[in-house]
Image (cartoon, rainbow, N blue to C red; front, side, top):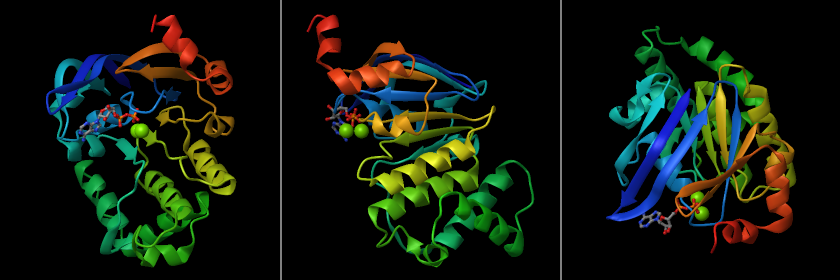
Length: 250
Ligand code: ADP
Ligand code: MG
Ligand code: MG
């Protein structure tokens, strides 16, 4: 599904990613943890093709394609979805119209006919139910005036609508109360399938009480310095990151 080899990336000439190796198979959930400023968000930005970052070395293969050769739009069409730490507001564009454009754009890429208005509304109703998203939000501008919890639910809703092969959740749990956290996590779990993978970037282990990762990585100073099973998240919760820095001789 995703094969990252020796990935280096910089911003304004400053190297942030210093040789990332990561392999995600279909159906797997990987958690990436690590202290602030380690490069977690940079990695997700680079995967979706944010032009602010320059890839200076390494390769990324996604579903057999050279991901780094694809435009950000085509990466999304190929089935990569990024849920942001800080979702953007799009005043004047209703959720319904935004999602309809996004879904039909993706169908066009796959050479499928657009959904009719009634087909679209039916899918939208089904997917809204997954995240318990209020129907009133559908007619409002994207994220405008949404509470923190509503924005996050909305992101999982968008993910449900687009059915990505690889979802990247970048600190989707930050600022969520326990109910919103549960809904987001349940949404992710309901969307889990043997074909689809997920990378969950999180500071805290609490999200991982709900979303059970197959593999946990620690990203530190631009490199993945530790990889283990779900027990690693618990160990980090208990002991913090200092012991890892010690292991690295810092
Ligand atoms: P994390 O998500 O792990 O907290 P980030 O990927 O956001 O870490 O940041 C990694 C490093 O890259 C930090 O040192 C940060 O200051 C730097 N960085 C991120 N974005 C920018 C930017 N737009 N301009 C300059 N430096 C940046
Ligand atoms: Mg951060
Ligand atoms: Mg971040």
